[in-house]
Image 1 (cartoon, helix red, strand yellow):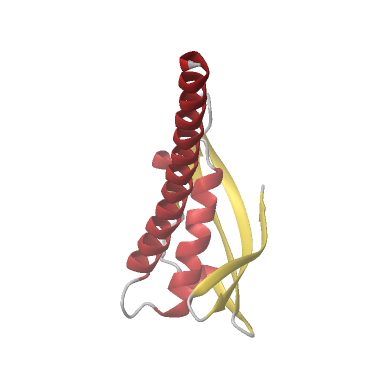
Image 2 (tube, rainbow, N blue to C red):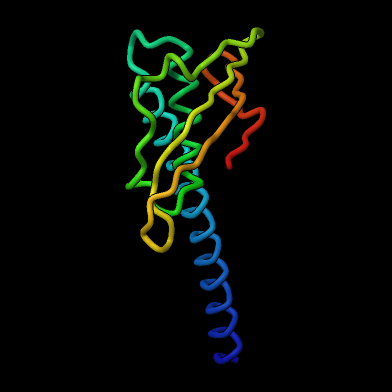
Length: 130
């Protein structure tokens, strides 16, 4: 009947719309990952070297854990004193950041991370903050 055909067509349209939404969400997630990777590479600078890239990666990870990342104030003095090459393309990054909590108070958070560089593909080996 006409009613059955209409119901079947509506079900197909709903299924196609759901598939399209899922594809758009997956594409948005992939775009966000590419944006973060580009930002980390741009922030590292042309001549900054692997230590700067390690610092930028860990800084991005730390910012992702904060309640109010826009208020983050990382320690001064540049990246150099806080990045140590451990060998085999592993880097230890330590430091602190001041940022607002949910009540608006500034709190200091210490952090430590080990990151690994495999031909500009960075992975997090360990991360701790307190």
